[in-house]
Length: 156
Image 1 (cartoon, rainbow, N blue to C red):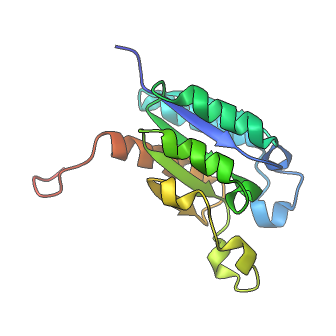
Image 2: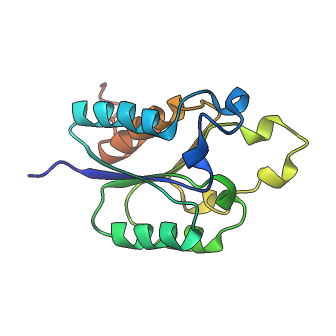
Image 3: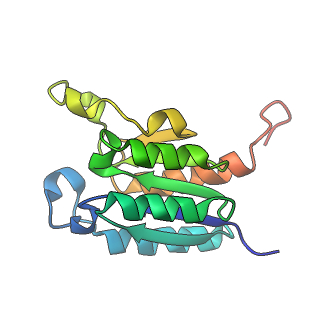
């Protein structure tokens, strides 16, 4: 039986990590995050597809291609979080776990109320925000947990 596939999608400007506002986002580049995620996924028996696009339609096409093919989706929609009904609608078609991911906890800054609304959140299984690049590893754990939930009544 082949390993489950988890699709990691990264939205606009995330290809500029390490260059764009490193004080806020840390010095890690997207390639660094991908490398660390691939190592963790391999240790978990998960195949990883890691992609980035600043084009909304490309992200939607990748989500459509994922339907009934992947075991889970991790998406950092970046600025499309607040603006893309198309991405939210495409994610809503999926039957697998979907984790919405963000580097920053936008709710900590009351001045950024335009960033508090997420069109993706209603169709996501869960949300991870505020942990910087480490959130990607947490999201991988979240997908794995959603695929094989622990029965806490019986113990681990």
